[in-house]
Amino acid sequence: MKLVNWGIIGLGAVALEFAKGFNLVNNAKLLGIASKNSVKLNQFKEEFNIVNNYCFDEYQELLKNNEIDIIYIALPTFLHHNWMIKCLENKKNFLVEKPAVINSSEIIDIKNNYYNQNIFLSEAFMYIYHPQIKKVFEIINSGEIGRLISMESNFGKDILTRKNFFGFKRRKKLNLNNRLYNKEMGGGAILDLGCYPVSFSTLIASLVSSIDYDKVQVFDKKKEIGSTGVDLDSYASLRFENGFTSKISASFTKNLGKQTKILGDKGQLVIEDTWTGQSKKIFIKKNKENKIINIDSNQNIYSYEIQNLSQCILDKKIKPDYPGLTIDDTIGNMKIIDKWIA
Image (tube, one colour):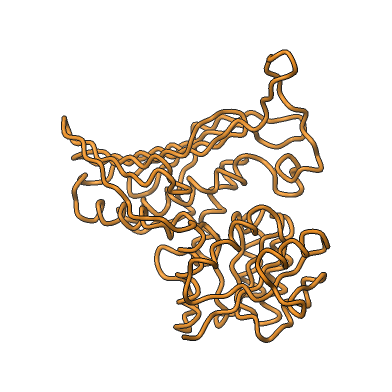
């Protein structure tokens, strides 16, 4: 069986988890890596048995390698726009880590000035390839919870509070060198975490009817802005033209969890861990009847994404299979994020 050869540029924490996913797929191989950090480059080389000839300290060299079928751009967000352009100029398929860009103007620029319809590209939301999301769609489409009315989706963890020597809690000082707290680098809870509930809200709303992203209303916005100018705790509501609504939240200061509740006129569906699928359970609540659906999943969540997208490459598709995000989906979601951040 032919394998799809992947390359990764940027070898941070997410790239490490992504790379582990190759151990559980049968149609793809991690062939090449690139990093300006020699320590990370050597660590990846040793852990994943990457041959010397496919280890580069310049990103461009990996893009030029003809044996690489697709690039995973795992760099900080503010570098995505430039390296997406580089991939397109080198006629290289790519998957870009979420959020794909800092604002909608960057991804619109990609589509208007650089987009090549023969190049496969997508934004990396690993959760949408997990079996539990497929099951959620099946339940909704079966009509079990009835006509969709609204949803609530959260993603938040307190990463700023720490205990001192005496056990008293205090908030960490924000460090501008940390991408999460640097506005120019694409920091803030909305961009880093809020992009998840935004993307899932549009996926669920599209099950009601097609979406006009320009007509999505973003209201009831509440934000806490930190000392470096990025949002640390953010809430909003979305109203779609088809009448569907969604309450969304993202936080660096509160343990909001990863839960999503989807309400229909016949019942409610609850996903305890929407983004990593670790709970492996979906709850359906109808009147006094409660049902638990167990999800059969033992893989690294990234392996589902790698397997799915690699098959698209093997099948010579230029867009990911549903519910994978196309460039137009990313543009639409970023327009909503822009309104939330504003």
